[in-house]
Image (cartoon, rainbow, N blue to C red; front, side, top):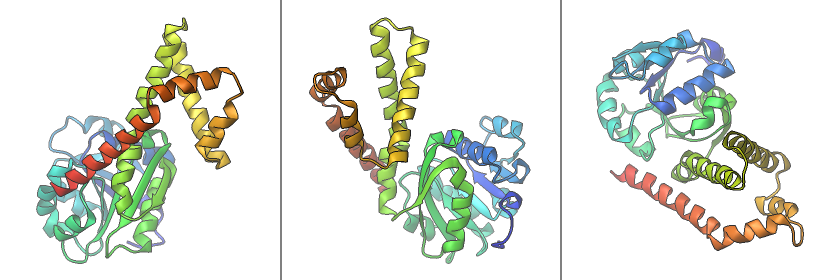
Length: 275
């Protein structure tokens, strides 16, 4: 794979076509980093391939066809399916391939053991907002993956949102924080809007304002670089509405409950790796 090759000419394959694969692909296509005709996706049935066909991507039911046609291959299957998939594609993988796993809980060491010696392996964990180019992605390199392979992955993912290389030990934490954390935020947004509905605001308007509130708060953290605790304090005035609301959240154990959720999801990701 030539380092000077334009990303738009890069042939990229996906083994697996579930929601996460579709989200990553849509983010990549929206960014213009790759062309739909240069994408080949495999899945056992047509159930998840129809939408990708509609986007102009090529599809197949054969995993080996993906590996033979594409030098950069994303493994986007369920974790328990990974061993069978790697056994299937083993003979088709060459030293030129870059294999990128998105499977939660499957460590790099396991991937390298199940692939030919010397295979360039990276492990990444995205989250679903990659589909709207506002995702959070972390990745780690295997023993044979170098800076060139890391740069290819960053190039493909950078327009999908935040993309950071980290130690592999952070990936399961990221799963609990951001991969699963999206659902925590949706639940919080729902609760915010429900509170407004209870007080008399129409549901559609309440949902819209709740979403905009979360978006604005997140942008302030990213753009100011301030700790969330400082920004929270900035909103509070003595005897004002916010401190009364925060007191109720503290009584409900919001912070401890969210911390417990991250811990539980991280633990589950680690358990999946052991299995």
